[in-house]
Image (cartoon, rainbow, N blue to C red; front, side):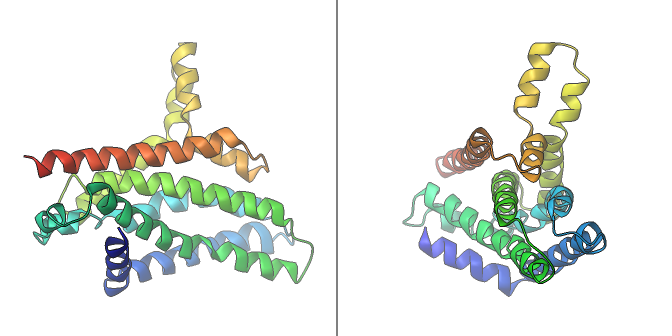
Length: 234
């Protein structure tokens, strides 16, 4: 897994993906940081974190679009499948490399916190809780994006497909509100990615939400592994 991880990290920076992702992420997060915090003269960054949900929805497909689709396009997928490493190691190596790239982006929030600390008291507990929410949410969405990438050899199709899947996960709340059957609507609300994230931005740290996001990431990665198991023996 270590070799796959290092190879994937290197590929992010030898292509333009890392630079595009970081530049756009820093620009959008900086815009929301200024608009919701600096402009209002406050040290509470919860407004910025609330807006970051949609930023993640838009940008994570950029990170994941080449994960496996590029391997298929370059005809290197078979080399991976026959390499002396488990399928789980291959998938997790790519997954953790993408998560590390994502962490490089979201860690800018600590820079914003340090800037605010020069002007007033920053509630670091709230910053850490919101950072954890960004990390957990992003980790689940990255796993979903990698799953989509494993299904196609076209990076554009992978990016669009990942965006659609992530948007569907985001719209679970909206779907629940249109269903009049309480049993079904309650199930959909319990699967809400946005509501759980919003709770973090309000300062509510819920262990069940942590478990939910980790479980979602595990399930998506498991499905990706199963896809490659079928290809290896087909």
